[in-house]
Length: 223
Length: 116
Image (tube, rainbow over all chains, first blue to last red; front, side, top):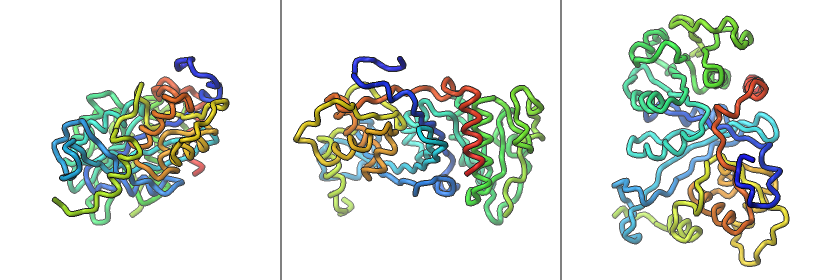
């Protein structure tokens, strides 16, 4: 019913579902590490061939005259159960590949924007991108060794985020921490609320409704 | 002029006849692909086509097909687009995640994440 019924044997399709989550942020902020920490398969790093997009950069001198380039893409998978998967896609860092983001973002449940407090400005483009398109996102502040700790509220202010957008301190090398970021995103994307410290207490219309700047998830990372 | 071996690039283009975009209606990187059970398999299929058909007897997302074939996603999509054109697979239209989620699915995903 969801698709053109012109082909035979279509009944098996509708039960399987793959959910897409994007991991964005500046170069070297930990996108690939995050995917690797939580993925059940070794994260796949592919060089995607692109053409016909007028990207303007061409390393294929001598290979026809067509403009062709490649972009690196990482993705990992989490199987929830047979026929239900979460896919994490690390978005290409360079801004000139934003047309690739458009494709990645289509139908995505939401995004994690990873931020490094030492160069917070690197995640501005990603924040802008998801805000403009109305794609739910959470900001994960990756607490690198030696980086100064900031209050989530300060990060929120520096990034000009709405009070509803969850800001989570995290360590993308820690499985538990990545899980917390993802559960926060799923809850925010589906329910439109930020879960409190007690994730178990998330109920529809429950106490998590009052998502104040100070009420976000804090202190996830333990350096 | 980097002097690098362009071999892999040439080989990948060979698989797709130089195309970087699949034929027909666009489909998502996580669209579910299913091999059409009663379709007769042409004799002249390339190994990548056969591998994809074999894998997708169980409904499989495009990204997983790429990982099994060890090919870039775009190349995989061209291959799957060709198989769809020939009536050998069907590819589910993308469903916006927000519309797909009901309470049960939400709880299932949260529970799954927490028990990782």
